[in-house]
Length: 199
Ligand SMILES: Cc1cc2nc3c(=O)[nH]c(=O)nc-3n(C[C@H](O)[C@H](O)[C@H](O)COP(=O)(O)O)c2cc1C
Image (cartoon, rainbow, N blue to C red; front, side, top):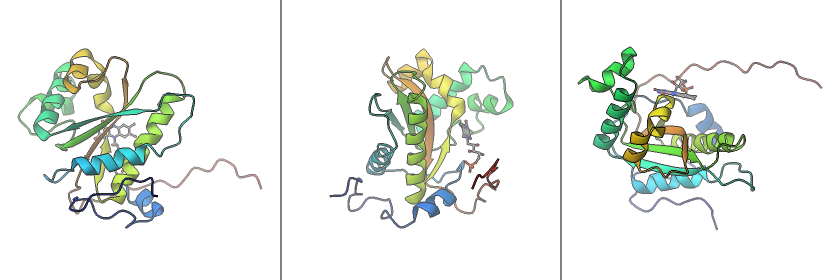
């Protein structure tokens, strides 16, 4: 039996395994312009199951996930974070203006990867789960963007209340998700910096 969550009939996600893992690795890039299409709960569920396949140390509590859906809710959250930063930076200034810019790039879905204890290995585990989410999203034809700028805002008391984050949890990786707007050039990659190769 497959341990991977199967999309339900009628789900908007394309069938899985339409890409190889190398296609997903090479095809994933940060998406900062999303279409207005929603990502279904079922698709998010499949991504969370993909996250749960990431390497994990058995002795630690595994990363946990919080999902926020709805553009209006995310717009309000973005506005809260903009006010928190007191709009000192030019880009963040736009968060509290009417420019339409939001920290989450107007995505309709946010996944927050959280840890229970700030131990040295809990953080890399959370990031590996986050990478699985982003690669699985790429494999399903979705776009994603890490939102590092939102971590402090979601971790402050008001932010925590807005997203219903339990006291014991610490947000680590925040991923905006949506359907990518076509025609955006992928990021140019650098070749790997190979320091030495002992044969
Ligand atoms: C730790 C981390 C935090 C990031 N935070 C943000 C962010 O707050 N807002 C944003 O638009 N992009 C953010 N990004 C996405 C980067 O802008 C993006 O990864 C970078 O432009 C490279 O693009 P690529 O992911 O396609 O290689 C973040 C990326 C990383 C790795």
